[in-house]
Length: 218
Ligand code: E4P
Image (spheres, rainbow, N blue to C red):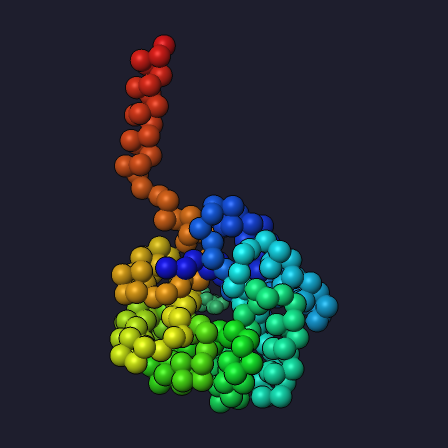
């Protein structure tokens, strides 16, 4: 299972990478705006800075919503670094763009996916990654994890090569359940990754080991 961090914050990306378990980064226009990154040149420089931290898989989202615009923007993004994955929204023009990039050997991440039908279309178009949004489905009282499980079955039925990148993963149980279901990748904020470290028995056990060692060596 791959771990991607869902942020455009360079310090958080560095911290996750330093932990040694990070396989990539996903960003979106809201996350870029949150870091105050604006203007084409700054956006590109920021993506390059992210690529310089991690080994691979940096999702950079297009803003255009028409086919020609997505192709132009996606090509420019892909030129920044070989690690870039062009992130494209699940709309009609987006499916055409994914098909185009797939035939050009440019990796894509199909984003804003909320239904099995959308998941099938993205896989047939040749998306490298599919981003079903778990938390946003939960937000409207639909079962986000059940959706991941549905897509897993569909993709396995046909041997689709598209990787399921569970997105909008908000807490550690989301991540663990995605692992049980067999999502290929999860993307989540830093606190969800570091949250996996926590267990009170680890803390109390370590405190006891250290206290016993200190006593024995006093
Ligand atoms: C996916 O790539 C999105 O950036 C992200 O996971 C959305 O998460 P949110 O629903 O918590 O904003």
